[in-house]
Length: 279
Image (cartoon, rainbow, N blue to C red; front, side):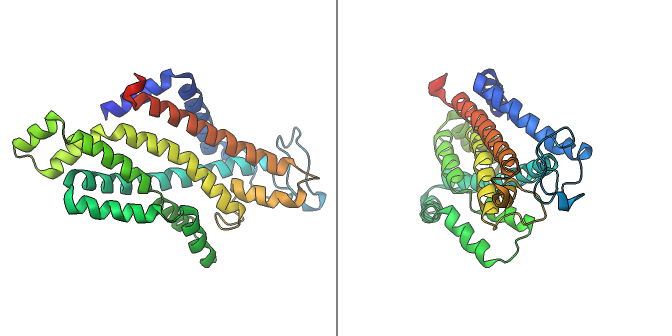
């Protein structure tokens, strides 16, 4: 845990890492407290008037159903961040478990698990998701999160396995084994805490990937279903008024760009912070 905190502090000292962290924090705070101060994102106060351009009453304008775009973007941020964080937490947990077991046990266990990972990586993740979601008529949000998380842990397991292979040759691990420490104790006391740096990098970069994946699937009509606001779904809805009311699609698109860019900036800074060659 100390190594992970040290990596975060070193990433914060980098301009890109600081900018990414601040932007992510702003998006997260807005997503948490913003809906309390904004109109109901599902309200249609004057549907006959159509879309209104950005102004004092509606800073981001309204869409073709007279719904406030700013309120929908903010609630969409809550949805996108929740899906990304929960899905990444699930995938990192599975990937870390498989990587720890594979790297420390070695032998047939390692060979079997890595062949499973290689086979899974041979099939594009998007293809699997499209296949499942196309068959499922209406996917609940919880099931959607599980699907994304359960198909995103393969690269993480390889990263953790590589780190464990290096760490298990360290003197303190060999000393613990010589003293008769149990494997569970060695994994959770020595290996996992020292592998948190690369794991944290994978998780941070994974947040941006999942946000893009969720937005793309929602744009195709296979992700978060209406009337729940989502950035990809808002861009899909804006196709009908792309010429007459472009703001209905521009603002959720900008939200995706800013959030993914900030996650990648912070993830890149973390990766540099945990890389010994950058010291």
